[in-house]
Image (cartoon, rainbow, N blue to C red; front, top):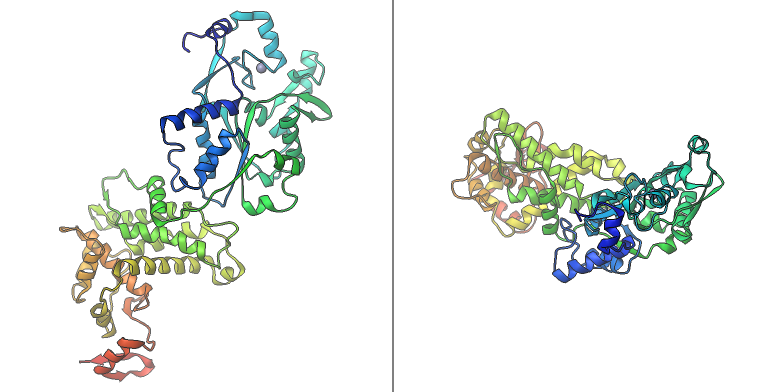
Length: 496
Ligand SMILES: [Zn+2]
């Protein structure tokens, strides 16, 4: 390839140009034969989305990814560029990357007629062959396809319908490459018509002048499924040209979700402090997104992006980092209570239904965190006896702790709570764990009990006994063995 510098060299080399969809198909076939990984970095789609994508590419289809926000749609489309040849020959300086062996534009044809085999050629890298556009209602034909420049035409003394007078839009500039349009239904109907015409007929009318452009483009799109299927949003002939509709989805399991966040979140902080993220913190952060997606107060049509856990985890680490810096600690261990510091990220990641708006985004986010903690805590502490700790609070104990309390403060203050340290150890503490790690595990147990409503927590007083509600079943009987005195205000106190 390095030796091929002129059109003559290219002709002699026997190089054959292929339509872009054939090129992508050939490279995919080669990868499949070699057993190479497809779409690296895309997690959890191996059995669902990837097989459909492969089929679409093998069929040389234009296709659309239908999914909610934060389902890696753009990432998949960008990954298609890896299926292009590393470099292809082009006529240098041509805005539509003309093939030296089969040029489209008049200027390139004229150059080749004049220079012949001596014409120098360029090699275009695949990264420059992927063009992406977010559709909005104000995108025009000029943006998308191009415009006629009357001044250019007058200077050149050309007929207006000659494409030499054309100022190319995004689609012609994506010639011999991949053109991705995100949120296709937001594109105005007449732009969709223009797009269709150029694909189908190879010509389009601009300001009344017919322009001929036999472009070679693989077209890929994304859309929200509900917008896409809504009547009248996509013109039928264009829909007809989209060979495959592929549905994306959110991670099906917590382990897929954890893997995605692990890949995407910025956790390797470059500061002087070491960051250790306990597994239960990662799991709670992930569970918030699962809870949110199932919450009927949250709009299902817009979805809950996988970016929620990603940016939440980043803020959780930052809050822990801030505490460690303020307290002079040498290791950063995030706590479950640090998740509340990520509220500014969480509230921006979902749209509310009417019922949710009544409750307010911040309160909903707090509810989500609490139920996520409850779910993860129950998973780890299922069948574990937590009564001695709860009783300590029921006997009037309280712990004025917050997310700014130092690790030593947490450990010292909770030293008298019988059984708490043992429970903390169950959260996965390693022998010789650092003080911040121990404090984080203690925090998790307290937050877990709070999530299960076995103890209470307030911003002013910290942790205390649960609000007095009649206890059920076995617990009720045990309590009644003790001498029970009802205090004014319906608070219970027990004496041994
Ligand atoms: Zn050209």
